[in-house]
Amino acid sequence: MDMPTKDEITALLSLVEDPELQRNIVDLGYVEDLRVGNGSIDVTLRMSKPVTPLRQAVGDDAKARLQDAFPGVAEINVDVVGPQPASAQRAARQAASQKGPGTLPGVDHIIAVASGKGGVGKSTVATNLAVALAQSGASVGLLDTDVYGPSIPTMMGVDEKPGFSDGKVFPVQAHGVSLMSMGFVVDEEDAMIWRGPMASGAINQFITDVVWGELDYLILDLPPGTGDIQLTISQKLALSGSIIVTTPQEVALADVRRAARMFAQVDIPVLGIVENMSYFVCPGCGHREEIFAHGGGRASAEKMGVPFLGELPLAHGVRASGDIGIPVVISEPESEHAKAFMRIAAQLSGILAER
Ligand SMILES: Nc1ncnc2c1ncn2[C@@H]1O[C@H](COP(=O)(O)OP(=O)(O)O)[C@@H](O)[C@H]1O
Ligand SMILES: [Mg+2]
Image (cartoon, rainbow, N blue to C red; front, side, top):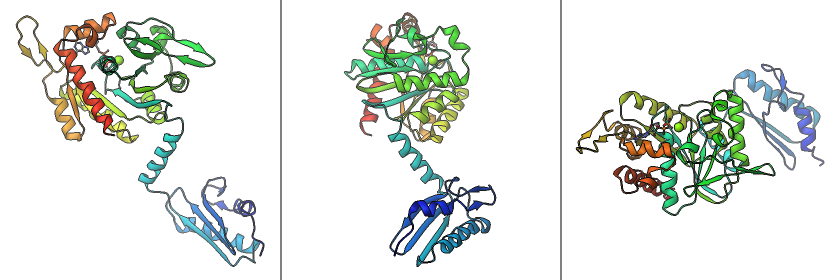
């Protein structure tokens, strides 16, 4: 017996309307599965809302039309099913993002350095981790996504334009790390007045047009907080995870929890928490002072069930090195603060190697 084609069946289904939305079920994307067997037609309609009697009636209508049009077909089934559970939707989204623009060819791990608010030392941590990883022999990129307040050019001591050719952008090299920053492209004052969509557009270009080559790690220095740019990045790129930087005191830790929630919503694991400005050792007398209290980062990490990556002291050299553009792991490699950065970098690469 001659069976109807899928096109013929789809044409008929497109005459069936969802009475609530007053659009046909094909345009609404309800036809999840359509099989034509030997003497049978099986259709699955996936509703975007739970199945009510009214929505079930849509399936009955579809079945009646198919039976009328193809009286010779012995068996016609139209199943009406509700929306997929959130977990399945999430898995589907993740699968799509992993094969789509999500991965960067040649880049093994993309790690976002984030914080709930500004001024906690995110860029300082991002630059020193990038340089420490590069010094351990890895190939490393550092992308400054803080388009409103790019600080990587200053902290890495470069004021150079990246190379452009054939619509591609070639990163700038400094201290063994490949760099890209909005600060290379526009003046800081110009960056300040950018609107959200322009900023997101620039980020998209950084993601698609920068030629990173083979990298073991690409570190992203995120802007503070949980805004549009963070969202664009977490949707566009398949990140290995995030590092959240905080200062030790209670108000800062509330921001950590907010940042962690944002990453949880987009299924990005928190690889660990870094407590910056943990303590200050007086260079004159050696007295240790805990200016912002101490231990909050570790306590939050334990509460959230994520690794605590370590503490960084408040040190004159850290600030001064950032200002002159030579990260402290290079300018004062024997200092306690430089060693603290190196330990965190080693712990991070250990965590990523186990993935
Ligand atoms: N551990 C530290 N010791 C001393 N100064 C620090 C330390 N961490 C950050 N700073 C300084 O604090 C300021 C803010 O740090 P930055 O990395 O720009 O923060 P963020 O990127 O989170 O806004 C910078 O001047 C930086 O040099
Ligand atoms: Mg910063």
